[in-house]
Image (cartoon, rainbow, N blue to C red; front, top):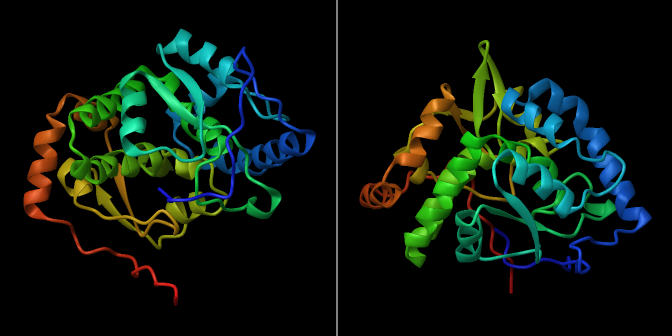
Length: 266
């Protein structure tokens, strides 16, 4: 995740609601409108079912208490607003508590097509639909519980399993490549890159391989993992993920398929 952000967290009132401006609501409206067609065409059925279940507003920023009410009914989860950036320890702890941390701000117009840090459009539109499904919610809970057991040096390994599944996972339906991940659902450009372009490398879902695969957050992913049978993903929730991490660490990271980050001149 990025180490800094120009955005500031918004403070909810005593009831958990945030006063978004008309301009901020308009950004949500236009983001939703831009993604609605691509999402219906290219996202997998579990995501689309969850999006319909949530029935979130299309013309204004949803409120966490309203989304939480649906999630609580469906899977016992809730959404809590957080600052723009939180650490891995906090993130894993919230997942272990069946709470999804949602950045409370929405991107500006100048960042409309791409924002490096997660905003509330990514969090609510991207993530919460899968949390209406008890199987995906259970997998996220398992990641959180593993994070509570992990040491600091293990965090970057564990988060890769979340990154390449819940954030950027792919699957197939009737032989067609479909997207699962929230980072794909909320991205104007990466969704077609992942499922239509033919440019990225597609690898079969394998927990150890995923843990060994480095990634960058500021580019389209050069590699995605395709979960042919979603039961394989859900079964990962019952694995000893800490043992998997130790196994992956012993093997070492794969060579990255992306160029190194250029250092800025001092």
